[in-house]
Length: 179
Image 1 (cartoon, rainbow, N blue to C red):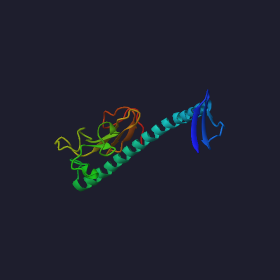
Image 2 (spheres, one colour):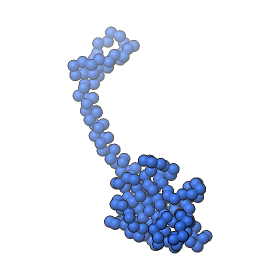
Image 3 (tube, one colour):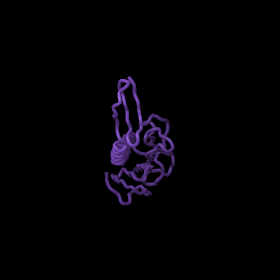
Image 4 (cartoon, helix red, strand yellow):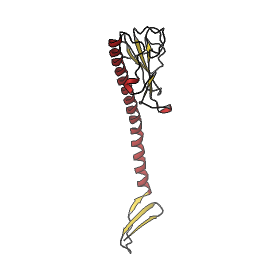
């Protein structure tokens, strides 16, 4: 038994069999190029679809985390009668936390979203011990590191909006969509 690979003028020949066999078998270079082109076309269609799918998955995770933090804020207020000094760190198993990053524990360029919680009246971080914070309302802002993905804003007054532009206010989004 033997395996022989030969490249003739325009044919790639692969022989496998008993020695002494002169049969030419294999694929022409044109046939191989057609297969490569077909695979390239399939990849060109699949890659953008996959990228969009992962972008939507990350955005859905951000929405889920915002809702989880909002629910914990309401629990905190029912026990303390204020939102002042709320610390989301206990939700994520760390001592103190000023901002939540997605995926959890990511650093640097791996961060997809930064979620911050603000006092609705002062615009300062609700998690701080700042005496200016009144603790009567909150705003949760999730900012994406991907410019093609949504930024989110949710407030204790019922506002829920998402936009692909930057969110500078804690009370409204520009060109917003609800979610």
